[in-house]
Length: 135
Image (tube, rainbow, N blue to C red; front, side, top):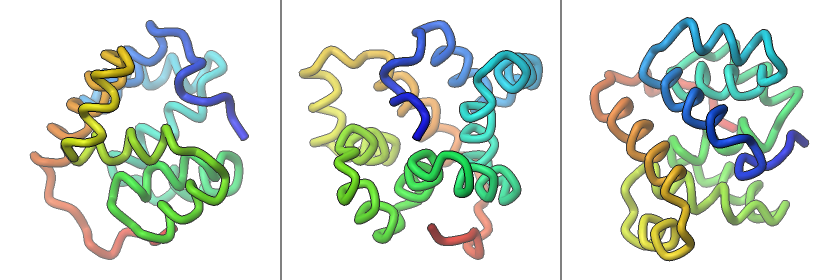
């Protein structure tokens, strides 16, 4: 498994957020400078099946996070099985679930609130292919 999301430097996570917004230069930087898994997660969140396939093989926890953000029950079960509760909370926050937003707020996770808002805003402004692969 990759290092947990909360262990990445703040500036790297802020850059990850910018890639969700479509910043290609930061995406390339992440991919070429030791953060390829974050670049792939960004691409998967943005709908890339190829990126999802790579994550599924190399970083299944991030593939499960992407699928949980898409509200796929089997991804939630997988995250729970491997005690990745923070990823469940983060996925819920990306869908504006009040309990998850409150947990992030109460635990001083402002950066993850910001990322969740970026992901939520991106998803709300997209037309999704409902044939996206299941976890």
